[in-house]
Image 1: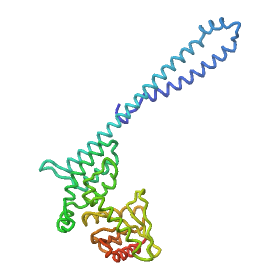
Image 2: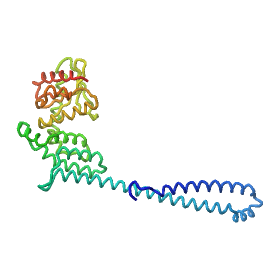
Image 3: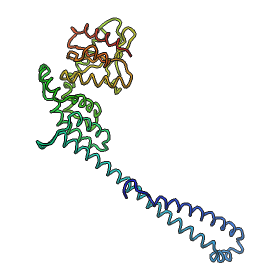
Image 4: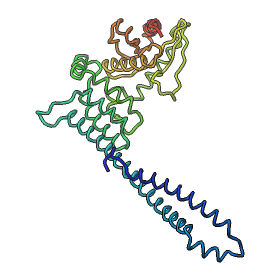
Length: 326
């Protein structure tokens, strides 16, 4: 049966139910009248007479209708199960077709094949992860992201500014899309450890850097109050800082390159504007890639911190972020 086609058995089931109800009413009424004339003395005579009466035929018809109704009900259940199975197969087929299209266009094999923009391929894979129903599908997305990561983020030393700029120019928007994918697929079979490693430094070093920055916050000024975010939340914010009666979120990013910092700042800005959250200070090891006007528009200030010698600059960036409005 094709998806969307009419289901005549459901209509037949409804008719059968009406017939069965009507037959039950008629037979029940007849049986009540017949039983009213029966007693223990004439029970045998009454039973013989009833067997030859229309009432017996009505009960026989009612029993046949009940059996037919049960059969139709079973057939309808089987039909619905088959229809659901066909729908699931069609959905799975559409999913894999989209994946094959993304992989074929994202990593073209032939020299004449026109490659799909990396940002489009990665965004398509993120959408596929959201609609995936099996870990096999999610793992397939992870494998393709692994392959794309080496193209989007080649192995660039953090001090090689020219190489970083060239890579960024070659893949506009791809860094943002890759970071969005990493966030969306975290802790699932679709997660890509290669993409995460390309975006951020090793976790042990990142944890040390984050702890050092967070430990420095309370000592920045006497009018600074620090509230740590619970680790159980889904927020990437590491702390909330109150200064001069205003709240500023603080996120520590141990990114590998300046372009990753910029992508993270843009992603955080979009999330915070949609959710109507407070301004953000994104602490990293790199200089801010934004002008003052761009930071005001994003409501994100990128603060450079490499050692306690940068504490005064960090405090100034927090004060500046607090004036961006809430």
